[in-house]
Image (cartoon, rainbow, N blue to C red; front, side):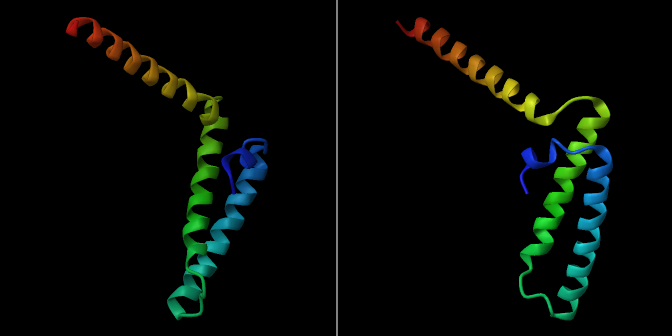
Length: 93
């Protein structure tokens, strides 16, 4: 599941999906402890999906989206690095 798939959902849908994932993760953990789980990555993927849903729910609660916030930070860092490089070039010459 990608974060872009989650962003369009409502809070009720996200909570429902989170509960379903928690239930499936519980079942997978029980199967894993009994040695019946063939693919243990199911637990890891469910845990990561729950974290993505929690991030989306927090974004809905605060009115911010994480997807629109990330590119701005990287753009600022890139601009700051470029500014430092150009400033250091002038001192050498």
